[in-house]
Image (cartoon, rainbow, N blue to C red):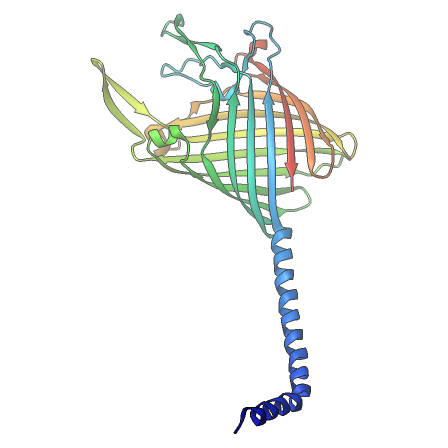
Length: 327
């Protein structure tokens, strides 16, 4: 068979099958279109359920005029030393950053990753350490610059239980020892639960409730002895933390509210975490009060005064500003 006949037969076969081919093409295109629509719907659904947020907290000056320039009260540097005496919480003014990226699994459950760090940006900030009799042992300088905290994997559950009187929601987290301090201490992991009980009010605009936080950190060795000079020293890592906060607020408008919160804090060190009958005073107990303003549906601004209830004095106070963005 010569090439001309072969070409003619092939051309006739093509012509005779055009109708069927067109029908098949329409069907295939329809199926491809359906698949494309389904794929686009899945992508849209995934993108729609992605959640991201950024939080900023500025730790400003205290109400006292006795701090050196650039210094303030930082509650997170408060607590007790080995003698159970209060630590000097004088610190640099600070900017704290918090990032989160997550996914809305169901209307009531969001899983997300969180990363936080802080920038102590003022140099030469001095603080004191004390002898057993309360006299000054040494004057030190705070470290400056950026320091990172452990990263966390979280699950936020918004509707655990509710009735006509109250509702319960909670954040549960798994903490990864990513900070340098945690690595040096051979921390293995941490877990925590942070429930909130909100109490419904019969007064329009009024809201109040309780926040709780229970955390447990695990180390290769949570308590051990070692030689330090001619002495035997005992290392006890902070193995658990507990706190409770009572809050009350009032919605002045649909964008502006005034909030007040009291926070109390305890911890356990080393082997104390193996029992439920021994707790230590941890960070200073505090009161915070101030307004919050919703600039848009995704941008929230806040300001508050923080004041320590533990040995209350103006030096143990700070002005704080916050901003939260959500996507």
